[in-house]
Amino acid sequence: MNTNKVHAKLTGKELFLQIIRWILIVFFTVYALFPLFWLFMSSLKTNGEFLAGNPFSLPKVPQWQNYTNALTVAGLGRMLLNSVFVGIAATLFNVLVASLSAYCMSRFRFRGRDNYYTLFTTGILIPLNALMVPYFVIINRLGLYNTYGGLILLYSAIGIPMSTFLIKGLMDSIPMEIEEAAYIDGAGFMGRFFHVILPLSRTGIVTAATFEFLTCWNEFVFANLIVSSEKLRTIQVGIRYFTNQFSTDYVSMYAAIVVSIVPSILGYIIFQEQVISGMTSGAVKG
Amino acid sequence: MRLTRNDKGPLIAFMAPALIMMLLFFVIPVIYVVVVSFFKWNGITDPEFRGIRNFALLFKDKAFLRSVLNNIIWALVAGFIQVPIAMVMAIILSRKPKGWKFFRTVYFLPQVISGIALAMLWRAIYNANTGLLNGLLKLFGRGDLARDWLGTIETAFPAVLIYWVFYIGYYMVIMMADITTIDESYYEAATIDGATDFQQAIHITIPLIRKTSLATCVTLASVMGLRQFEQVYMLTNGQPANTTSTIVLYMYKKLQEPNYGMASASAVILIVVGIIFIVSLRLLFNGRQENRQVKKRKGA
Image 1 (spheres, each protein chain N blue to C red):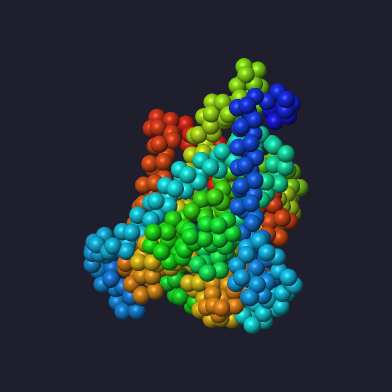
Image 2: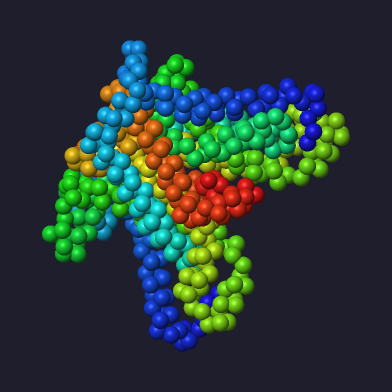
């Protein structure tokens, strides 16, 4: 568009706007990246180097043992495994339950269907933090306090509205004719779901799963609320306690934070399209 | 598709798990906080009904009032400073300058990092002795400005609030998606008429996204502002002198006491403040008459 204009043609005012534009672009790039870069560089320094205080200095010798420290001394490895396990289990359960209900609401007319759908979409808007008290009580009553099961159940439940919304959206776009053809060929309810609709909804399911896993991975409030034992701590709760453990060993603490961030960033780079569409399409609906 | 008699069983079986989970973790909890907010209860002994006393106590508690005020400031700053900045960047990047895809990826990046990790990062940045901010100030010869950002009453709340304002990627991406749906011919006509990029943004782009993605983002950002917890919990835990507390943090502390009645009452206030925000922003962006039309389009 206009940005391709020949430079000689730019008037003073346009040149000024161009400069402002690039200042803003660069500012936000630096703002998003430099703190992370600083964190990473700090995590590779010795405490002495770090305390010397020059934010732009690079570590003389990268201190990878800070990472070994964080992984072994503070039991970061175990917490990472907990997060991966809880995240995968909750995502699988969530996506399965959501696909089943999305299929019903997308393909069939039945009594109360629209009310159910309204209930699901309203769920997206509820400030879940406000429900800390009932969640705490319910998980206790179910005998799931301080268990993997409690975390998995809670995580998959709070993701149901979003996943149903994303998966149903995709199922709505599958033409009825495809399913009707299967129906005429004698495929039953289950057969049509598992052999026709589910494979065709792949992209919606992957988006929902990516979003759900990221939510689980980053979740802190409820993990902090319904788990007390160190053995079950997820990575987010874990790094919160590093502040106490590593009160003087700054560089190891920074290494621990980096370890908790890296999987999110890697996942984002690999699944960028799914992450962005998962996070934004729910918003646009609201 | 028509339901046959044989489909009824599977249909119920398919709907049941999701409905049970919705009931257990959405419907019952919302009713639950409302009911419990009228009781005095510590979770162990029998709850004791006490009408609206919990709410009366809340409104007498300076720490709670400060939390509500902080949340309102947070919501307004998010809606009316953060989102407009995001809008400017969305307009700039949707003009597809060199490398715009890279910049979009980078701006969105902080969004995938957990609130707790970001808060810990910023705690490190604000640290009085070892922080990046004081380090930068000293490097540029303004060491006199260096201070304990999170420990000083004057700077604690602004510090907690402000770092968040410049993470605009989320709202920017939503608005960019909207801007790309605007018909190219509007801009072509405007360019022929000699309108500059700036004039096109003011007269074409902003009016066209105002009722759609801009309204959505302002609402979303305000609601996020009302839900803040991890940031304050991790950065200051509400200190110094409760100046950085939020409703959810207040609620969390009441839950720890354990005072379930007061915690639930503050949850109810949070939900009510949220509804007030959502309704007033709807009115602000749509006006009364157009409400129906906008709803229809959203449903489509």
